Length: 155
Length: 425
Image (tube, rainbow over all chains, first blue to last red; front, side, top):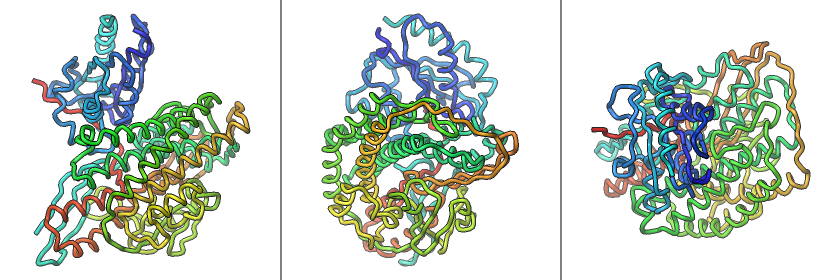
């Protein structure tokens, strides 16, 4: 794959504790020797800007804090993302539309990359703080390894 | 009759709209704000001047550039740092980029559904694909401008106290210019679209507050003015803008000369229309805006006028930047203690940051006032005046009118998080 064809986008707000884990993960991945060329993107809380960040990619791997009702720090690889996003229309009503809304709109306009994968991590605390909680920071090496393997499997 | 809109949609953050009517009398009418962004100030205490902008850039995904720009200006005021004309030009370009990003998002994604009978932009992706594609093209143009100057579409990374760490290349500026010129037909179509949408009738004059149009249409500056005669240096803004608490809101309200006042596109228009770009003046005429306009629903059209203004001005400013050439300037300054306030016209209105630094260049105290907090009192005053005029309407239509009024202000209740929720079984 060419560099722009495979992208990893971390999402979240580093001022909001564990919500920023996607951003920290991108920083960690920058220090890792990835098996092939990948574009690493700090997507912040850019909302619909995500649509433009995905444009032209063959595959996008997202990393985001996701409330899944699992123990804090749990990692889940989700590749059937679109059918799961039932809350999307409601979320689109927010300014800072998150991933769900951006994907819902992208799907309606048939402008999404063919492959989308989300590495979701259950946050412990989403509240004003510049630090991740220990439950989440302790799983970062495992998260980075899972993403590295995902990249290795991409052809 | 009680109208209660829990978690009003198509605004940023969480707010409830409550209207309580008894035999045609308005007993209660309020916008309940259940969250507040003010905790970010505490995070700034103890931070070094060189680290402050990167933190404030994360406060909001919609106005990250405005927070960064005003934060740098406040720090520079505190330390007596002068910035070059090149830096001024580039910061102005970034401010235009952000107003474009935010206004286009509000107009197309937040406001238009109210007038086309849908709950969100999603159904329009199928039925009005031309419209949604145009919206995304325009938004992309704004993103490109922000990316070019700030290094990223949101949360800029190139700005430093005193200047820029990384400058845009002439080629990137030329590419943005090309994209902006190519967007002009889309802007024209947007004006036609808004001309075809009704403006709900309602008039309530209020106090209109913004930076003074001393060096152009309100954007940056040292002086604040209001339609009631306020003429106040930004450094003394606390002498004019008084915040207060109300029981139903975690966000502070604010008053100026009267109990409530308006900031944002319509206030800027009323204070600075004479300084609009030629094309924006034409568009404002076509859209029927005048200095006498006191209908808050007209904020949408004022927003569109500002979009046209920002595109036209940005094109000229890129030319000016290219003619002057870009030169590397290493921002150098002495760290010292001091206090500085700054204001910028963010998309939703006047945004203030005020910092006190100790002698090592770390913040002792931070104070921020966001535009939406200043508008909340005015929104409620509008609602109280509007409700009695809508009693003949069916409840659903009345609710829609009230929601559309709140949205006309484009309130940004909080700038925090966007957690994705998935039932994982």
